[in-house]
Length: 207
Image 1 (tube, rainbow, N blue to C red):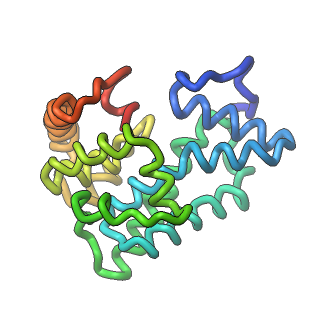
Image 2: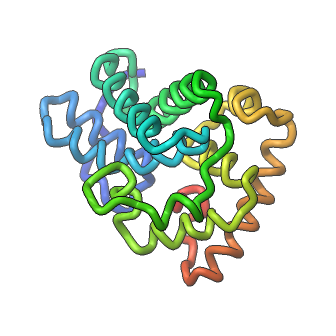
């Protein structure tokens, strides 16, 4: 695969992976500001993926920062800019798994504990809760059981989830991931409607 920036402008309504690909290709073409935009786009995604592994706030922020450093240092390994979104989420997930094992913290942090305590300063958490819609959406996620929360946080942002790896990380039978994911999304859809949000383009994309 060759690395080429997607032709034409990418709108805000484009899929996240497409916007990420455009920004990444733009950055590698010499536009330094494109990396800032890419960080703003993907950091909330990485944050929720990392938090699925039960890391406390400081450790989670370290993992997210480490993921971005890995991208800057090893971006040459990504042959096709369209793979950058998947590369980031996989890298974050692997690092979070490693750190969580080292600290013996494998249980997810409940959203009902996390969301009300978001700090005022510009941090990773405040970026995640920047919009009221995002806040209400993750409140809805917080109404699900711990198993659904962990699974959705891990798989929601992968264009092509590695079910074998996820099964090992979450200690779930690989054959149960797909059916469990569908049931969890159905529960989330109901919670989202009750929260006054109307999913557009599917629950996965909105997460």
